[in-house]
Length: 98
Image 1 (cartoon, one colour):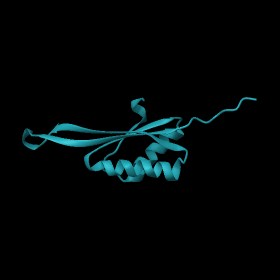
Image 2 (image 1 turned 90 degrees about the horizontal axis):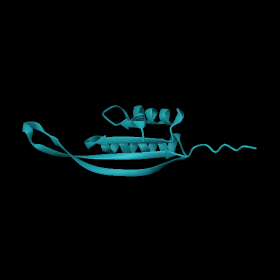
Image 3 (image 1 turned 135 degrees about the vertical axis):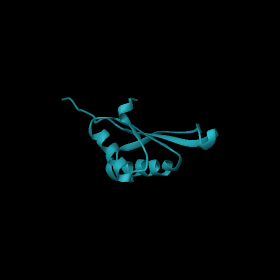
Image 4 (image 1 turned 180 degrees about the vertical axis):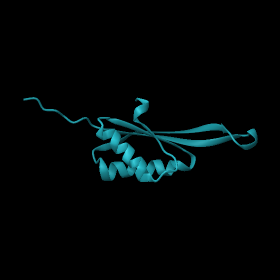
């Protein structure tokens, strides 16, 4: 999967990210990867579900990966931060040649 098809979830409203995912699909992508860390994980799940249920009904959740990343926190301490990657796929339209 190319980095162009990756949407990083942050603090913006959910619909901003939904629009970004739908735009990727409308531009011809068959796969979009949604990535988030920490408190943004629930927002990433919301984005995936809104896209799948309201906008691109033929999209499916192809893969979900969970991970824990170790980052340097305040005072130089190591802090564990959870992360998620949700891969949404859409079947390419079938072209019938007659």
